[in-house]
Amino acid sequence: MNLMRPTCHDLLIFGAPLILEEDIQDVIDTVRLGRISAGSKVQRFEEECRHLMEGCHVIAVNSCTAALFLALKIIGDYTAFHLRRFYREKYGYQQGDFPNAEWISDCMLPLPLTAKMTPGDAEYVVEAIQFILTQQGR
Image (cartoon, one colour):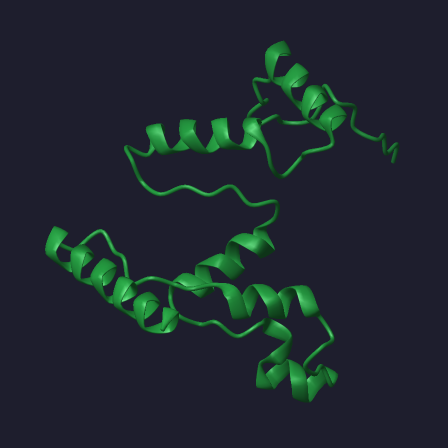
């Protein structure tokens, strides 16, 4: 039996990405600037996504992990992963092991905003936040 390794011509390609020269140059420019996760190109990307999504809120993040973390924050689960009981018990993680994750976890404020909210609901949230900030300022 003569087994031969398949060549690239033998493989089934489900879809080849369409990457324009302009897109390649944008990546090169961004890498040269050293601002891969921030800056005007990221803002432009967020604006274009917002337009395509018909005005939905859009924020670009640099990893799936960051996106999942933000999603958990939005639904109200604020605890940094390593401080959850499972990770504390299984791996012995404790406060101070990942200070950046803890800082983000402590500083984020998930707001109760959904597509089903009425303008009155949104105004109530804004007024409540203004009240809390005013009380903190005293």
